[in-house]
Each structure stands twice: as structure tokens, then as C-alpha cells.
Length: 137
Image 1 (cartoon, rainbow, N blue to C red):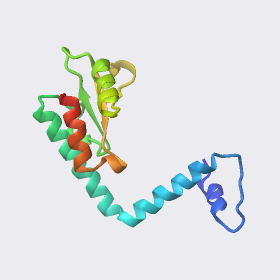
Image 2 (image 1 turned 135 degrees about the vertical axis):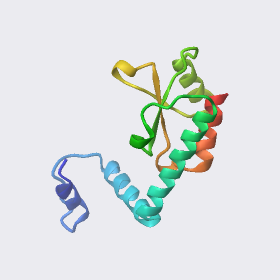
Image 3 (image 1 turned 90 degrees about the vertical axis):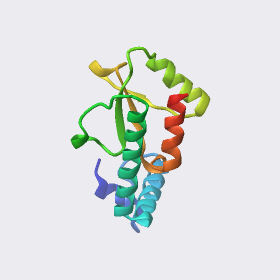
């Protein structure tokens, strides 16, 4: 990915160095505009707050988080799937009943860990609470 060349698309040249999905360029530009409008410090703080809330909610439900707090990401939280729970069934119900999709891990952790995101528009208190409520249901 050559970002400098891609940025030429927005210059007076309107230069395309390859055939890309133009809608993706517009989406990337809009995402950058939204980030600048919110302010990076505010954005980082919102994501950190959503992550803390997600972790607190998962722990309150008696779930064990994957990894140490010292190395935890603020956009995705790993959580061990309890042995008594059918992880794929829970993921399916959340998707079908609540239109919320959580991920599963890969490799040796597949089927053992869920990946629950709280990023972008989902890094909001209401979305975190909705996700936790759907998981508990």
C-alpha cells in the first residue's frame, strides 16, 4: 500500500495508480474526517472508556478475560468461552436476535476465546451495554 500515491487521487492530478474501489477511498477519507473532527485525544479516551466498561461488564458476568490487563487492547477484548457454553451457538444467537456479531479466535484458541469489539461507533456506552446484555441473554 503506497499511501502517498493513493493521496494523489485527492490532489489536483486525480491520479489513480491502480484500479481501486473508489468507494473505499471515499470511506477512508470520511473516516479520517470524523477522527479529526472528534479529536484524536477524545477518540482515544472514548475507546479506553468503552474498553474498561466492556471488561468490567464481562468480569461482572463471571467471565475470564484473555491476556493481561497490562497488554489489553482498547478496541477488542478477548474472553474465554466457558467450557459449559456452546460458543458458536451464542455467536449465532447474538447475530440473529440482536444483530451483533462477535468474533472467534484463530488457530489453537479457536472455539476457546471470543473477540468482542468496541471500536469506532461501537465504542459508546450504549453499544457496550447492548453487547453485554445480548451476551447475557
